[in-house]
Length: 259
Image (cartoon, rainbow, N blue to C red; front, top):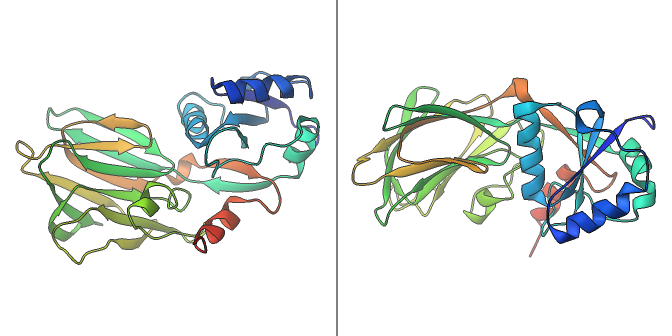
């Protein structure tokens, strides 16, 4: 980045984020988002995901620099003095993140497409275990997976829901996706797979009348799905900015040594 980058200030509506944004307001000249070179995003990981999705849907597709005023802040930078924000942005390291595209067909025949920077998950809607057929690149790999659900995670999202479901942590740049079952019952020993990010992953819901399933792409949900396909959307890459020594790839490595 350069010192001349025009910055836009975007903040969540929480009290913490609003207070931090008010302190930042006097730290420089802020541009409207549609005229900016970089978005300074104040909030937590959820708000950062919301902002990235807004950029995909409505533009502009500009880099995002996060300041954590949430809980975990995995996608954010540490909130420090507001006086050096322009310098911090100028010195930040850029990391590209490519979202997943989820194409889902509901039992009603409705077809929808959503993007996800963290993961796409299929989840049972009732007390009945979900039953899913799992195919990769057109070949059925598991004819019947009985489970609470299954998810596909990007490297950026591999330390989120995926890790909680005992999925693998994927380093950035690994060009891999994590395919992780959620509470699998059968095949009992299947613990998931690591796949090239060029893979096309497809799920077919078995016994949908008795065992309805919903599909979730980050924060967007479609209920009663019949089929879901998931693949990386290379053409929709966005950029996250991180302070030197506090980048996303370093956090992913660090997470693997937490005790």
